[in-house]
View 1 (cartoon, rainbow, N blue to C red):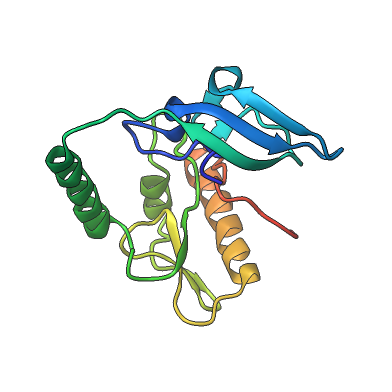
View 2: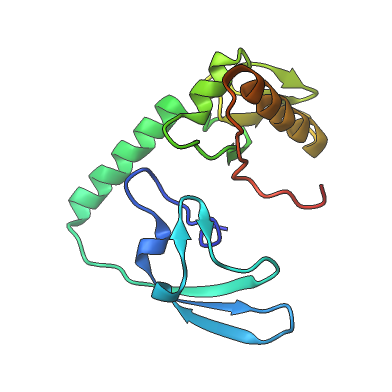
Length: 168
């Protein structure tokens, strides 16, 4: 998932570290690509649908362990402050539209805290849908659709999910 969606932060993403990727094509053949052969975009890559990523080789560089630890602790503290890490969720739900924050758009649409069944748009960060106890996948999908409809109605902006739907 991290490779297919080019996971990362505002400053860095996994695609910038990939030397090679081995995948399984739908016809059963193995494919090996160099990282430079893959198009890496914001929460997107050029891997074809239906191709399963099996392994990757990353290029890492040695760094000062104390600096790295400090950076990791700072990132975690920032996430704990801003994101609902104490509750189960599917992570960040929507890609940020160019020039906008998905969380801010959802909040401005009055949806922070909105719920369907056991799923709730987080009161801490509106781009997260949390499970308050007994959420179903259908509850989460209903909130995703509500957020998309309301943001498009109020702001004229179409939100694009960054989560992947299986079976919907």
